[in-house]
Length: 340
Image 1 (cartoon, one colour):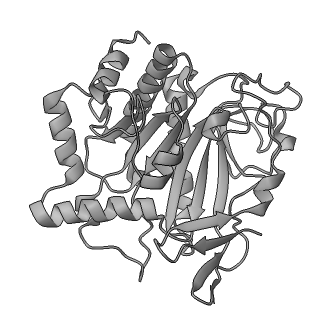
Image 2: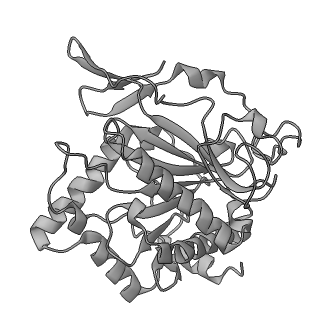
């Protein structure tokens, strides 16, 4: 059973997950081949190799835990946190720890081996995004959870241990420190200027234009002004909304379009880089745990794509600084010109 421990100096939480040490590692290097059809647990026909599905997008008449699906959600076999059990908090001298209670789910994005998210048609990508929304909506009903993270790792350097295209959802019983920093920064800006900082960023990026990678009627993708990583991309909705799970049905296809456009440009322009996708959203707002009354006005959900082209080393770990060898303006111009 995992547990969550807090650093008493900076308030950072760390998950000690001993079950993760038993994960099978498929990769020996970055160009490892996908598993054979009979051993790929995420391939259609191998549904017996995963835990029973939680939710799926299926063809009419197909049965749960069998073939006929477009995308499906299953519990992670090697979870960081487990949904079973009560949430327990305990002090150990000056230290604090919490039981490893949460949820860890896998969204299998396609039944086809070797097919990437950006290869899928827009309605299929929209269906995957719809599963993110549906699972977050359901998990937020659990009062034990304070924050939900949707993320995707592609490639072993990005943290993936299976090459079959998938994303993950983790429900946490605490709000991560990195999220608190974003929330606090957005709140302070709103209190100081009575404006939404994300709206101001988007307005300036559109006016400037040099860092725009792609845009449609509902979303804008751009390389952040202070990008930490080369070719880092932020995808932001034009509509003000703090919670991703409140994305409208009419926004699913435009979001799928922007996500696909960015991933294709990275793949073609940078020769299939490994990457992480991280969805930033507001924390759970259960009664007695509510955040400030302006959260809906000062925060906006958004998605980050970070290609793994450089490594975090001692300088970054020791200072919190990031060294980006590519100017964001040049990165955006390069990606914008890629024929994807």
